[in-house]
Image (cartoon, rainbow, N blue to C red):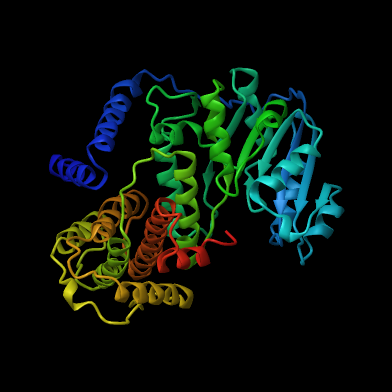
Length: 464
């Protein structure tokens, strides 16, 4: 990253989040830079492939299910074939599946618990499964996660016998059919957790800020192996982000966790744009409930809806640019250099179309268009003429010219027409994600209100 880029981003962060948050960010950055080389990295989950030793423990896998896909049977098969542990129990908490999920659970002799769909919550279902499981260790998984091999559970267990930890989670590996957004998301998440350098043992951070607690406490229910005696003291809490909340509570109370990159679980989703918007609302609200000092900007309804409407106009301009034929080179570095030059040109937001929420070159989603029209209704009700800037425009440009550009340049040899369309679709879903994040922040900061925006958010944050 260039010196000019660092200065610009620092100035923008200071203006957006304020001096206190900016100072924490600077301290956090220099602490990470200056201390990172002193952290001893190694493979915490090393298991010799020729080693037939068996851990004398029982592991209970706890999986909430609802209309699991056809691949769910593959998950049950590979779990039943795990080696290197004394015993494996599979506990399923099903919340009213109407497909063949229950029949599959019975076929593979799982410990099946059935509850009405109305009783489901992420915490309740997993706590119920834990309470009805026998193992000394609990392995929480999702129904669409997949172990990589038959020693997968043994590898997850290994660090417990060499380090003083109470829980581990591992990094994710995208499915073969994962779209570009899913692949970039996993890549970014591993960077955020600092897993690209190797496995980590984490504990209560030196810097007691939201960023540090998220980085050190990020357990995930896609794969979370935890000592049952510890879990039963804490149990999951809340309707969402119960895994992060558990991790933060554990490290605050003096426990250590293992975050593993040497072990991976196959897991990714190809979702539509409106799903990312709705999910991001819930994620952002939950994050601020768990980590109240996480740095976010105060945002009025006027600024929020203006950013979303102008951000869509910015997105349309960028997608036209992405899919245009201006580039005479298919080389990723040269392609994104041209994108970067043209994306910096100013946009006239006074020419925003009145009701035009479709995009060229990609498949548009009806539900997302419906949501944007509702936001436009609110925009029309508010005084938005004098909103000075558009943070979402800068966010769109940064994601395209820094994040996507870096990932594509490292993983693709050419940028052809198909990849351009996928980049454009990724931008659409990214924009939807940022819309959801901003709506979630507004919701968390204005819970006592009942304005039109809060009512819309209430209609969007259910069922995630």
